[in-house]
Length: 384
Ligand SMILES: Nc1ncnc2c1ncn2[C@@H]1O[C@H](COP(=O)(O)OP(=O)(O)OP(=O)(O)O)[C@@H](O)[C@H]1O
Ligand SMILES: [Mg+2]
Image (cartoon, rainbow, N blue to C red; front, side, top):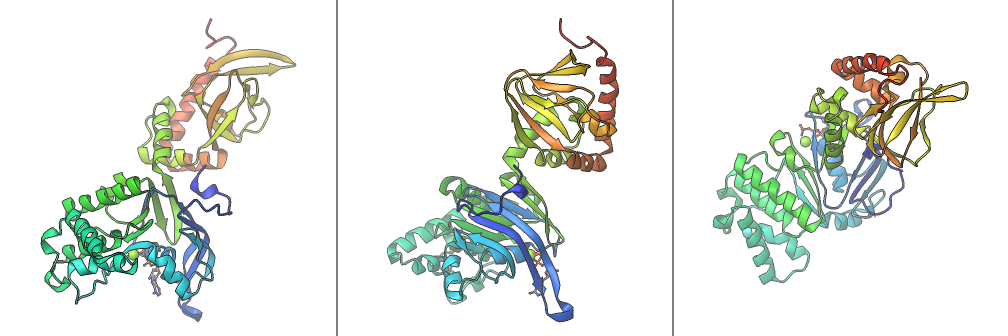
């Protein structure tokens, strides 16, 4: 199921649950909508990377999720709390469970790196000795062990940023919200920081939402969310999408498509199961979907005045049902599951979108269409 299809009910398991969130800035004539119908779920252990052009609403969304701004319209649950209509004090409580790394570091100038990092632990009521042990460990992890007793004014921009990161992570929050956390860091240090995020999400099951323009760190993402003009344009579950993409790339018709198009297609594919003996496609019906067979075997049958003729078999990795979508004509044959079958299906609407974005996709499907017309002659293609 794609992330955009979920039911609006919140079942308590997502760390972030946004539903139909709209947001405006300004008053009267200057009132301008900056977020439109935003839906997003982030699960424990997920590292969601948010990308998108400047001004697309990433920071606004992050500040709403973090309870730093009041929600105007839509539904927002964070760490199991419904943020709608919470008082300032209640919002403050939710915020304490979140590790924030924002563009302005907000370090206390009068405190050292170590003291700044101890602050969240102090708020959690952790004994002083333990505070120092954990804060030192976290700063050392970020290669700041040699600057424990420096105040922000004597640190470089990148070092200040690392203190801010240490401070956000030291309390082991269940949710980390990071806005461009690697902006002031060089390549190696950026890598250390994102590796640390990945470790925390994998080891501690914390959820991370990270805004970045840095495409070099996309590889750690388990979810990639792209925002454009205040809307979530794409929302890809990386692992899910990789499995389907790998499968799609082995399919002859699709193998030449660029990975981005495959990822786009795979995002819209839905799993469907058919028990042995059931019909997947019925001759004469409207062609509303294309299928990719993942498991099991199916047979293509031509039905003619009650007589059934076997045309060919469909094996795992085969695409079928695309002809009606290409020609806009009813199904020319039926397809029946010979055993329990698992398919991934793509709706006509999404199929047409993929065709619009990739001329190559259309060409290759047309090629297959013509080669198959010959294969569909009686008995051709049926193993003896
Ligand atoms: N406090 C504010 N008052 C009025 N408009 C605002 C305010 N904050 C942001 N905006 C506007 O809202 C839109 C979204 O801004 P936002 O900061 O969320 O974008 P962004 O995706 O984080 O951009 P960037 O990549 O540059 O950080 C922009 O058009 C911006 O001008
Ligand atoms: Mg921003």
